[in-house]
Length: 415
Image (cartoon, rainbow, N blue to C red; front, top):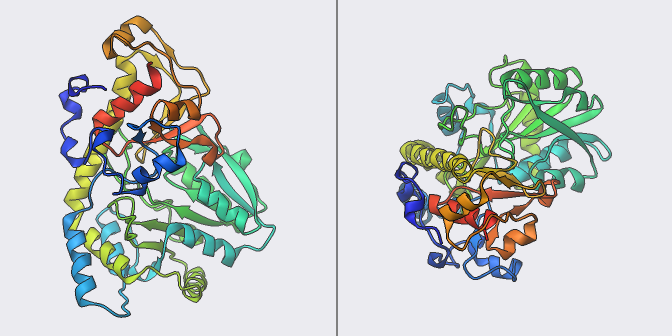
């Protein structure tokens, strides 16, 4: 097990943000992320590091928990609360214009995407989606008897993520866009967003976004900065064909409530049709989740800033680790999110195997894991790339203590 001395102090400045360091310290009953490991991965060792489910190893802001608890005691019975002004103020602070009347509460981002597809598409329609992308979004398309049209991304000479415009389909009815992308962390350049919106407007294609990871942007040198709403730099007319969906559940680690989700739809006709479809299925956000959202957006600025800074250091630590160990491998964290997207199928190399091994342990030798199963056997549980239609890759959750990140990478690259 790697000791604290293996991680320079500069990466430990925000270590108190994170709850746990070593696997043996986990309370396995505290979260599904830990409790399900033994049943889902029976061959994993007892000290397995859980880096699969996308939640964070940090307790939510105590003020949010207190606010929710007080509400349960004093506002029992059927309740409702308008989240529009809270969402509007949150985005105004990010210099992003959102009208309070454009906000529709929804039970979850996935349910919102599912309802949007049911409402605006008919069986057999083509729906575009980035590849790779979050599996449940693809499931929404398939489960509605729609045809998946994969859209490829690429990186231009300036290092910006763009779409291969030749892979777009004029015949599609919708584009389900995970932005920032999960698992790659890709953030499309502003010019690419403009081109995509123009293409979709010209061909009557509805854009449905999942922007749940947008609070964790790292556009420059891994310094934290929220990602603006998709296409927010475009004029109001251009943005009318977009259903933005998001939630506080990721940013404020409120999946257990769950934190309220919402759709932002500026076009009144689209919004009315969508709102009716949500209400008819009773898929509005629950009152407690609405309360949690208001508390998060009004009280959570400092808490979230510290989380962002801690994640920025964790991302820098990953780059540092590979440089220090002289490891050359294919990986990305993109410009947003808290995932390391690592290619296991492309053999990693080490410039000086003996020197690298001696830095880790006298017993360690460079021997990179090459399959998801081999990662499990070494005690590192990530998300299998097959879930994202990307076999041979693994997604690792970096929202954890920096020592845990180093421990996991040690296991994956040294034996």
